[in-house]
Image (cartoon, rainbow, N blue to C red):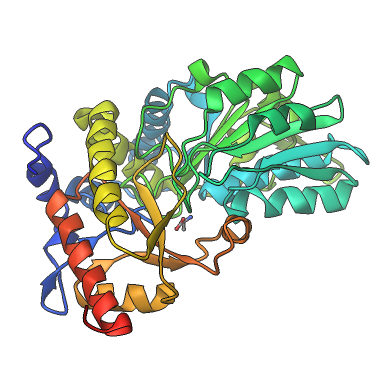
Length: 411
Ligand code: ALA
């Protein structure tokens, strides 16, 4: 199969790391749900910042600080356009998805009382479970869980039965990191709003694969990481509706987030600065802005449609291997494919694939409750990015055939 409609080789050429050999074999990078590779222009943007205008931001009166501040705030504007936020200030720069969720979970500590409830789903990443558990421990609130069907789709009838006037937040993933389910978040948000329940969406695995419009979704919070979006580590975004950013207190306090400090009392700036204490990850934010430009130029709709084709291709190939079971077969999926193969341990599969230059993730994928739901200790997970090809997926199948030969013996 060819990819005439999506110039994948043109895009691949922009990622220097894809030239690497692993064990003398071309790198086949299929661990994009863990982190994506960086195009040259993102790497160069970071270098340019360091070579030419490195300075702290919002401080000082010199030329470099002005340039650095402008670059940082321009990145915020780019990110806000990327997710269709009304106002760039609604996009808070954080360290990543985990910190964004922790920020909101910390904020809710002051809003919850005993026996209030927070709803999450059975297919969340630990980052969208553990912070809420901690908030529940501190406040006496309770965590409720939407179960999923055998195909990895959520049971929305049970969601309906879980929601009540005790529910103070629904925190749910847009795309399940371990099994790829794309949740119908717009529908879920509408259902929650019918009960006046605010919704936080963990968008870490969605933003690299599809267009996200936070105003259309109408969510209260949306969180994602830069490093899964072809940008650097150490940067992420928390989007919030204005009324909620007003309502929740600062997560961290210190320099730059204040309007005045005396030994008796301090007063705080409004958002976004209220939530950006200390020196922020300026270089990373600026580079994330470049990654967003890169993706916008290609078009998320094109990426989405290409990756859907990769998903169908890989699902057919893998599905025809005897003994291989794909975990998570939702109708709507991102190109994240988790599988088990007989009783061969995922780490053994990953090790053999590694000898073929193929990078996949194995284990629990920071989603132990998902693994428990499907009765597996772990899986092998393939997750694509915009630079992956059909030929690479063919190589994965060859690698798996070798795993089978090693562990089952020749056919
Ligand atoms: N959350 C990342 C993953 O799913 C690390 O691999």
